[in-house]
Length: 501
Image (tube, rainbow, N blue to C red; front, top):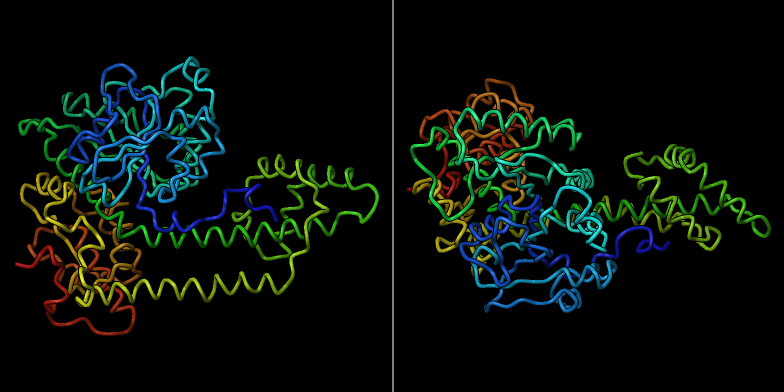
């Protein structure tokens, strides 16, 4: 059914084995490259920083035992890198793409994509000579997190950047906004800047949910403790780095999610092409009939959705599908058999749930210490790790080593909890007040039961929870929802490792 023509190429083993991907986007001179340097704790090969537009390439910053840069043409044919599909953008783009590899513990856990700064006006757009929006969308589809950087002194959003943000539609849960260089303005101006940023994003992003914004200054210079917003900067830095720290844990579940999307897409595509094929004449008038089908495709989609019981949200973009369909001969496609459909349904209903169960079991075995080296599953859990050290700095000696060894909360539970936790409005990196009520509403439990859970996990009685406390709270909620009783006091294996003394 030509899936690779209509959509993305098939998933390969290297995509499944690849590290989480973090895409960094922003206009020129907002501090993207400096942000990456700060994050990994060192400079990387080929890095250039300046007030003028310096990064004119897409740079994949990854881990390597030795410092080196790899040209784009070589990188896309490398068997251990997930960039093969970028060849479709041609040599003009590949000349503007490179890999930068260096020895940084942070990069053992994810790969960062530094992007060219977006300029105002049409000058840079005309000079690119490759599909910039298409490349951004390609990376966005595969990214685990998308960071949009803004300079507190320059909030104007150029037409090209607006198009980039609009192209991220469907990835809302991945997007985080970083308001950089915020320590260089006073609180009154910062309040105005924040309001202006949210207003601008509301016009461009067009999502019902408010995008999560982290405010701070991400470079090597220490924050000024005397700044009135020092605690806000410190807390937001902890929240952002906490999200990045959780990415390796979430990667396996995200890849399963992407696989599920692919299976559903195959099912829908096969149903569409099969139903359209049935309408084609056997001998004469094929071209005319195909043109009629393309013109009336919207109505065809509605009919297929109703007859096959497919959600309208599972259908591909109409205009893009029309353009691709116009280049194909519908009559050449086979009719999808019921047996083939059952195989896809079996994958969705049996095989993939079994895979999720195995992932959960693997983590439980790892938690019990039977793994030869459980901490190697997530290098962030090492005290020597650059991001853990940075998190220690932000917390002024707080717990950065929040591993799951001997903890009742499994990898899957912790990942789900982190997704909810870091999607809330945090105060100094903690969950409090109304945000806590919203987060706990996902449990469906009564207030008296939630009050008891809160009392059990609020170890220091500060009326605020960190990510590990929240994960434990959701675990206790699952016990109640299963019809069991909560223990009178927490067993040792229930206490998060970060809270053990």
